[in-house]
Amino acid sequence: MSEQSFTVADGGFYHPNPVSQGFWSPDSVHARVIIGLLAHVIETGHGAPDFMPVRLTADLHAMPRQEPIRVEVRVVKATSRLKVIDAEAWCGEVSVGRATCQLLKVTEAPEGNVWTPPAWTAPHPDTMERGEQPRHGLWEARRVAGRIGGPAPKQMWMKEIRELVAGLPLTPFVRAALASDYASPITHIGDAGVKYINTDVSLYLHRPPLGEWIGFEVIDFGHAGGVGAGACRLHDVTGPVGLVAFAALANQPRRRTRKFEGSDET
Image 1 (cartoon, one colour):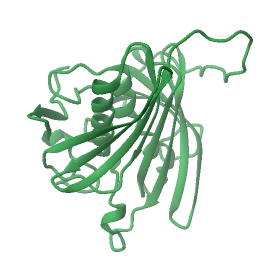
Image 2 (cartoon, one colour):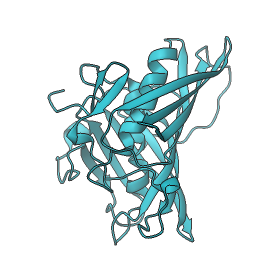
Image 3 (cartoon, rainbow, N blue to C red):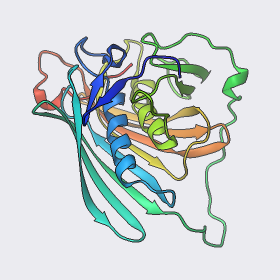
Image 4 (cartoon, rainbow, N blue to C red):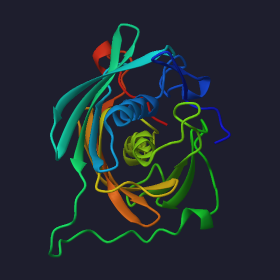
């Protein structure tokens, strides 16, 4: 990838590049970078070809600053069929996010037919016009259906154009983790723009995404009293790969506390 990476690794720290800037503050780091780093460190230390990372739940509980980031990892459980790994991201002495990842042993599918939803009918992204792109240039996008600020159905292809860590190609898991933060804005954005901060992300995968493109299909959002929750189904160019669910908090700068200065969206 020719674009500047989000971070540079050095001596156990990840130094954010300027392109990692978050949406809510010019001196912040984008939530997708924190989610991606948590996934990267977990996979690097505990991934294996025969273990599938099926769930990554990231809590985004403080706004990360443009400072060196370190990630601490702890093994919660490790058996022949299951691993549960915790990771926590720190900026200085401030914990800015934490994640739990569950990895399951890959075996053979059992006999019998089990219902699954049909694949979406979106055209291949390489056949579509480029169109309007995210204003920060964090990724490349193709709008499939719906108006971004309008009601569902909303469908979008997106492709990463930057390495998370300089010199390291994106793995399918890290690619999906980076992309997962996009589920919140594409789902909840309304006619007044982006008004919610996603405070967590839960990424579920039943197989690794193939290729560079990940498709988002909005399937649910509800909100009341400044609190929201929603979900997107995920696809690659060959079919469904999983889903993303998230919680969100209305952005109210005068009332925000450090506890909820969580994620940032674009």
